[in-house]
Length: 112
Image 1: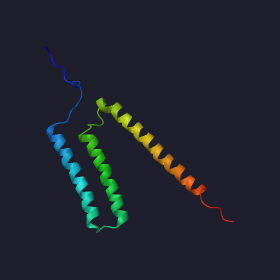
Image 2: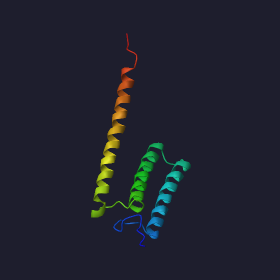
Image 3: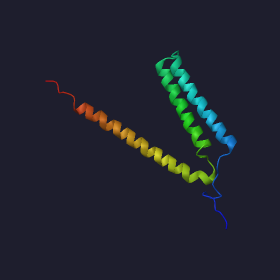
Image 4: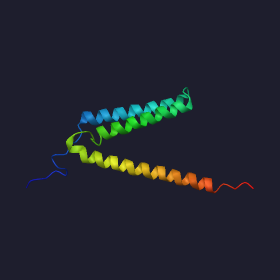
């Protein structure tokens, strides 16, 4: 009796080295953000910008090392689905903020 693997043979899975690299990179980016906030030596506006940048870098690293999303032909549909999902999330967030802003403006008391 032949045992079939749970995943197709064409799917790319990470190696031990790739997973370890991704984990260490994610850990370093997290520790850098934590150290920056805890030190308090950098102005708040610059701290926020650097933390957002480190967060985006961590998302990219995790998508590359753990989800194996890259520009290879095998991953093209997965990347397109990810981009579509991000567009929908942006529409939802921007639409929600727009509605909340307009509701707040319309509920202000009118001057007499």
